Length: 469
Ligand code: PHE
Image 1: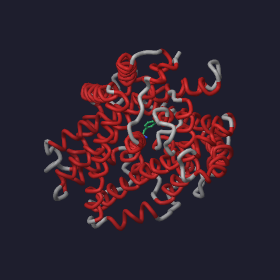
Image 2 (image 1 turned 60 degrees about the vertical axis):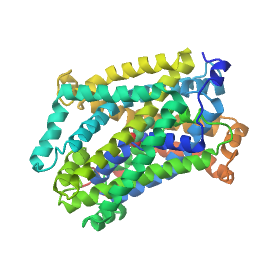
Image 3 (image 1 turned 120 degrees about the horizontal axis):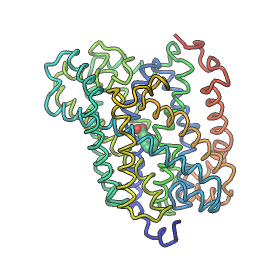
Image 4 (image 1 turned 30 degrees about the vertical axis):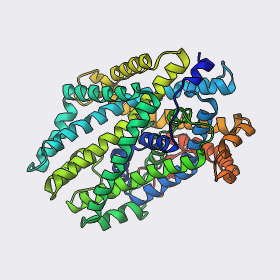
């Protein structure tokens, strides 16, 4: 168990800016640039985006504040945080372990997709896409997806990079790298956005993303919007709780949360405004699914002037986004071992990082069908999709619900009020926030969850009826 000397030797962010960049780095990831545009495309755009924004504002943001409150109050990673606030044997520590499990599972498959982004950086740098036909580019993704050895190689390369950074600790590892990765990411995004505005398809893309259109939205899509709002803000598994535990007492949690979720949302919307104009200008469809980033975009780049440079920027951006999120996933798992078992950082990072790598092997081999091909027949999903489903649809919403209930109903009022208001100009919003974590968020999560396990009929959720169009 952690001792007080362990608290003293825990790392701390050096500045508020450093914390914001690291937390935004956790939030901004493949979820924003890879997943959000393609699920927006699949769900028909505008209305889905609107529902997503409502979920962020009414549920995500209040829970983010709650996670930071718990983390900073306890100065521990998730398991120890609940123990410190409620006693050694508290049942709440199960929620902490569930977060560690979620981090473990998510990073194991996240690293596989992140590995693809490294492969695509290399392809962009070697001008692989120029002069290739759409079929050739499409089949290159197929080749990558089904090649077990290439997947394993990049999965290992990505995990090693992540481990290398987290080994450096809070200030010299996570914060120092976030200070490089995040500004570079915002700059590349800006360049790509300027280019997108100049594309002929920009107007159509903007109205696709912003004008509510109920045609394609299915009940499943509404649930996807909620699940994704947790995933994209890194909520429900203690990532921000852990980052909050490295904050000093005088920092404003409310303003920081607003900034972090605002940045995350801006990046997700900007990603759509970068992808769709290019896709539409090249006469391609928005509904390409997971291949949107790895097939449609390279095809578009191969036809554009300046496409080589743009493709390099785009895939480096994607890689940076993935890396800064992966760091936070590993940090949750590693810091729990540091806090709970008194391990050194070195030992915790190396051991948990290797375990996550091994656990990710079935996901890396999912496309090749090499390992346990019967799994897909039994469960109906390959390993990769099984883990993603388990984490995004079960572990994160359940974790988020628990966190809302904990800060809303279990934590003493003076403690949470103090954390909420200290150093914040937004302290007057305390009653509004309390209503949200006590009622709005728990009720909304529970309801949507009942729909997703079909205790309530899904077709109540969307106007277009069961299954939509
Ligand atoms: N928020 C990250 C993304 O959008 C993923 C993530 C989830 C990171 C949970 C940390 C914790 O890609």
